[in-house]
Length: 159
Image 1 (cartoon, rainbow, N blue to C red):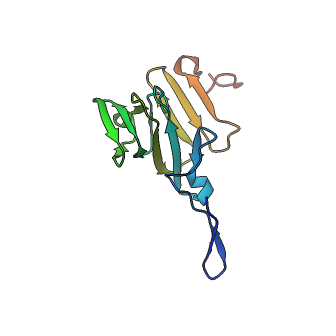
Image 2 (tube, one colour; image 1 turned 90 degrees about the vertical axis):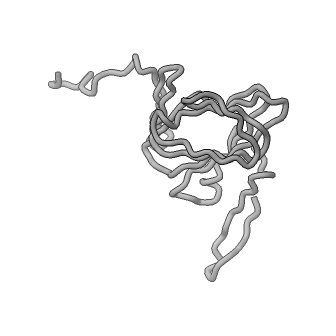
Image 3 (spheres, rainbow, N blue to C red; image 1 turned 30 degrees about the horizontal axis):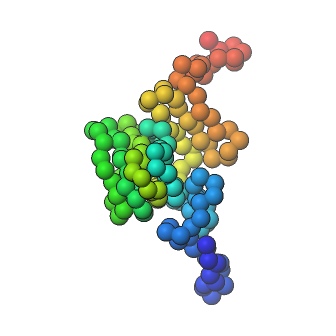
């Protein structure tokens, strides 16, 4: 990041270089760093033999840009090879399910982005889990579908 001063009021703009930004926490929250409230954007580094995340879908459209390397994209219609410069749009819902796998001998870097919505929900079909992300961190939950209870569970006077 390189802080730069711009504008009449001398506002500060933070810049993230997607090629050289150092990833020390597993992902870089680009949207937060540059101050976005409307767009989620993350840089992920995927080592050889690793996966970016479980196979999943969300209820917001999500985009992928391959910044470096070659990956296998698992999608509902099978596996596809994606490489540096490729852009993919994942539809909202099950049709946009995806997973990125690095089967190469070199590291890969991706930029994933979508609109910023809270709460957000992710569905993990392989493990039959659901993630709920209300946006406050404190109430983020991931659970197996079989552990769900009716909304009236534990509520007095409701059947």
